[in-house]
Image (tube, rainbow, N blue to C red; front, side, top):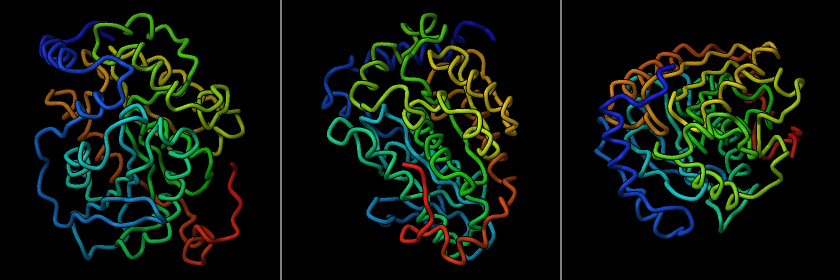
Length: 316
């Protein structure tokens, strides 16, 4: 670990921080969360409805079959961002991996506190499993993915629906509402994403901080052991770094195939930024996604067991 930002990352970090509002004003934060440069062309991009949740579907090769399908949850502290802010990132992931990407426009806090976003996330997963064949994908190769708060939603959804995902791809997720790790102290200021912002986001989101469907790091060993293969993308200079490392250790102890890729010299949010580490991380994540093996549970969806209107029991 480098412990400090690269010169390019420091310049970008300072510029972004200067233009970003402090915590407390929902409208100002949402107004500041604007899309960046457009992503690559993707053969098919369309909006759809996934059991009542708006989604955007990115298909780089319509007509193909048996591909992985990534259900993607955007970051933004559960308070801001949406389909448009993460359009370029989803385009890049679909184009580089060959997978279909379904980006979920889940409900935001504080208007819709926990568990609204988690319920929307689960709804989209079940819809994606049921529609995978129609989308040219294998229902046994569905991966839950997300950045920042979206990574939290991906992790929580994997816990709520054991056996229904073939992988989880988590980029710098918040995993413990207590915010008690050492990196919070080290990088909680002057690294764009501040401890004050994160604490405020948690407050808007709500829920019991000790509940594993709020703080996945609190999940028990048995629940963790049921999770699929995992890739964690972490930034060295990020207040959430140590939560990610602790989660990886707990997954490993539970026997989960978990890989951590810790990128030095960068800060929270680097995956979508014009930095060499961001491009490398995205390329690596796309290759990992493309290599997703079948979970072996695809037949259950074809028989109806994974559909939203089925009798399959899922934890609350």
